[in-house]
Length: 315
Image 1 (cartoon, rainbow, N blue to C red):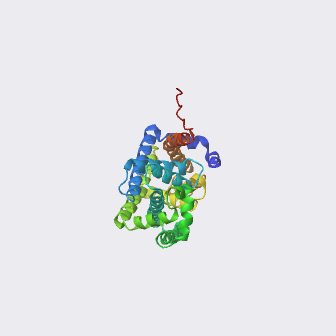
Image 2 (cartoon, rainbow, N blue to C red):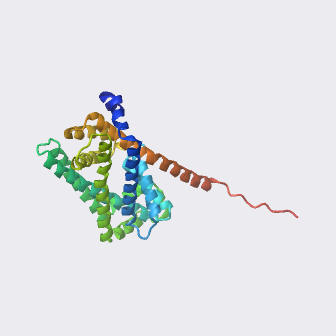
């Protein structure tokens, strides 16, 4: 990422970034918070009845862990599931709802990518990006189908997944994998809630494009919303393929340049958009992680604090 900024000129990238303005940056952050709250409601719908506040906080922790800490997205999901469990939701339900919510979000992301590909072919029929991304989408759809089949049919893989997500605490507080299996079956029986969760996630992914569209308008580099949607959907498709790289470092910036320039976006503006998103994630994520650290530290301190025994009075 630093190399790209140096190659294309730090001053030019900075000018493009500052053109958005503090007011524009604040609006981008507010849009992101609204989308996080909506995605939290999609997650909450899998666990009725549950506190909306609990899942908004857990989703903030989950996203902060994935985008700010040097973790893979799986690490952020572990933190989010733990936040739900600490709020009183049974451990197997917290883990199962996280797995299903991740699946619904992944399916919505595939639909979002497909929408972007269709629009790309409409705008650029001979684009060299179309076939590789179509092949990648097909592989991702196959992976999603296998993952859903494992949730519905498989016990061994789910047992191992329970150990990964639980990190030990699932086994201590519940019956472990057997309880997770039961919780997954219970969630999958609620078809209407699954459909609602998918729709909410898809709406959020499409709405995510509004941040880049607004930033470009404020920077006086406007693009039609359809073109921005193509750029954003294909960007997140590439990020998904590179899920093992923490924070998609360098991948996001390279994808912005690769796709953005095909639609007339200068490399400097493409990097500025990427840095704007990094700054947005830090602005939201750092306070969340700070509060999370205080909460976890307080729990650890209370658990380790020695119990004071009453002193007997001598007569």
